[in-house]
Image 1 (cartoon, rainbow, N blue to C red):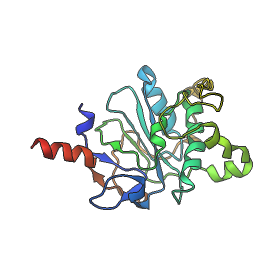
Image 2: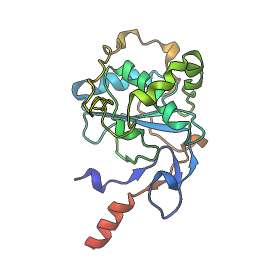
Image 3: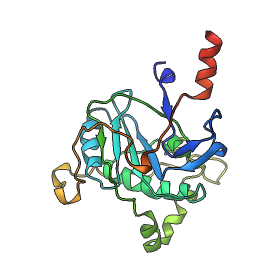
Length: 222
């Protein structure tokens, strides 16, 4: 597959040099998080426009398939321990805005993101942090998000199993997509749509790297 040959980046931080992208090798966190929405199909452009209006979204691009989105959020999670809950709270918000589920596999803190050329990629060099701490303080029941999404980050969105004989629980219904006609300039960051992402902000200190396993496969072939 073409995707398997693409270079990847670990959005959430920097891993130890010459090591795999396993969570244990994460040395420095960036404060960012990556969300993936697959199979948006004809809604891809409309949902991208919704995310461009969010002040905590510094970057979004169309996926390599052309039918989904990669969305980067300035999550401001400062430790690996608080990252899962912060990710879950923001994920719920993004799913409500888009009216579409996020890929649960990307909840893993060092999930690779393919580097894809998108002429309509969006970049905001000065994002605001997503207010997950404030939301949690106002609604402590959000802490149960990790419990209701069993094995959070396993990629089995909507197909989790409860404690009754291992039977699958029915997926929760998603809300209707937000109305794009109600977007206001007051909620939109002052950025230029389509501007190419350039690593100029401290929270964008990414390191481009190939997946170690893919690299080994290519080396063996050669």
